[in-house]
Image 1 (tube, one colour):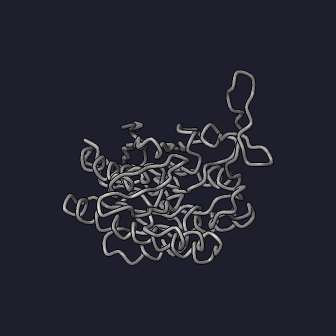
Image 2 (image 1 turned 30 degrees about the vertical axis):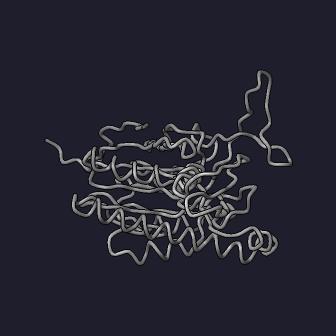
Image 3 (image 1 turned 90 degrees about the vertical axis):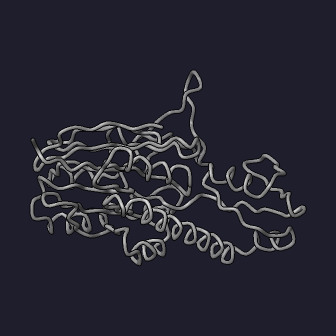
Length: 315
């Protein structure tokens, strides 16, 4: 019987406690050897919360005014990738005029949640001997990578060659091509090609390796996102359906074609779950539905030189 390495891959949790905990549980339930988090760890918003009394608080979440216990508001915010911030209306009105202070609060909240997540992973996965590689994505501030690097259990794979077992090396990159949102990890294509090529050159055996690049390859079934107008709003075609466009990274596709790894793992484009064959390589994107608290992952079985099987997980 072949020795298999069982991998669970998920990505783009964007601060969702529900998705993260489901990922840890899925790794245990499916008895994997390795769990890989493909990036975009941090949430999207700060949700200001104002105290009414000891038992009741108020907040506005996506235009809906809510009055509820603090934990209920936190749970609601979590589902949209929000970080709650206890404040008063005078302080908040001042903060929204001072972007630097607001950015500092956001980063502190993201770091605090990540530290909790790393502890949760160690408590749950370490006793099961499950390795955990957590990468940042283009949405994530570089300080989050430093937090992962400081963990005694969770492994930061970004811009490194790591061995996930005796047969398979993995290279990872958090950066993506330029997006309309000017994210922390946006880079131009020339830079991306050069850094990816330098990483791939360090592999001992590219054909049995894993590429873990946050951005999917351009022009594939796994890089299609809604086309946006000048105001960054989706463009709709006849029938009310959004128009889609390829937004992935050309350099990623070129590096996959050049080195032909066993598999490549991607995220970034939430709407484009699926896979694409590029030469001998199978490229995967599980997609993300974090705002709906739906976990999306891929269960992958690798033998020494072959992708034996895979299964998309939704739940």
